[in-house]
Amino acid sequence: FHAARQDVEIFHNLGAVPSPLFDTQIAGMAAGFGEQIAYDALVRQILRIDLDKSSRFTDWARRPLSDAQLTYALADVTHLASLYPMLRERLEKAGRLPWVTEEMAAITDPALYDMEPESAWKRLKPRRHTARYLAVFRAVAAWRERTAQARDQPRGRILKDDAIDELAAQAPVDAEGLGRLRSVPKGFAGSRFGPDLLEAIRAALKDPEGYAPVIARNTAPVSPAAGAVVELLKVLLKARAEDAGVASKLIATVSDLEKIANDDAADTPALHGWRREAFGADALKLRRGELALVLDGARVRVVQVRRAPKAAG
Image (tube, rainbow, N blue to C red; front, side, top):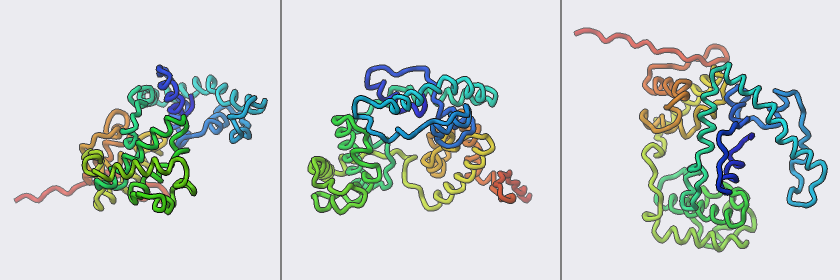
C-alpha cells in the first residue's frame, strides 16, 4: 500500500483488516524522503521511473475505462513490490524498521475505523472550548459523517473541515445565516443538505451543556505562555527530525507539541517509545530549561544548559 489508511478503511467496512501490511509512504517518511511523499515521487527517486499522471483527474465513474486509465491504475500499484524490499533494507540499515512496524500496527487497529457519527468530532481539532461551540461542532461532524456514509462519499465532499469550525463558531439557525458563511459552498443553504444541517445545529443548541463533548485535560486550550513553548518545540522537532533523517510529522504533530507544552506528563505518542528517544525526552528537557536552542550560522543547534551551582550558606 501507499498512504494505506483509506484503503484499509474500505477493507474494514467489508469486515476484515489486512495485517501485517507495509505502507510505502510511512516507510518513505522514516527513510528520509520527506513529509507525506507522493507515490510517483517515491517511484522516481528510488526506482528512477517517471509515472504518467495525466489520467489522475479523469472521470473514473464513466464506463468503460479507457486504456490510459487502466494503464494509470496498474502503474499505481505495480511498483509497490519493487519499492518494498528497497525501503525495508534502508530501514533495517538505519535501525528504523521497528519504528515503521509500530506505525503499521496502528494503521491496522480496527478501533481506528470504528466511526460512529456521534464520535466523528474526535477526528477533528476544535479550536474553542465553550459548550455552545463544542455542541455545534459535535452535531455538525456527526451530521457530515451520517450523510457521507449514507451517500457513500468522502467526508470532504459533503463539507470541508474548516466549514465545521466556522459553523460551530457562528451557529447559524436559518438558511440566511448559513448562506453568509465563507467556508460553506455557494448554494449549500438551498440544497438538499441545508435543512438537515440546520436542524442538527438547532437540536444541539437546545441543550449545549448536555450535548457538548468533554475535552480531556491535555487537550485544553494552549495558554499564552505555553504558546511560546510550542514555537520552541517546533524548532526542536525540526532539528531533531533533520538529525534523524525522518519526516517531523512522523515523530510528532502540532497537537502533540501543544499537549507537551501544557503538561509534561501528557498522554501523547511523542513521549513514548522511539519517539521519546528521538524527540520527546529532549522536548521535556527544553520545557524544563535544561536545553537551549542556538543559531549556528544557518543551522539550529541544541545545547545543554549548564546551571551555576547554588551558593553555600
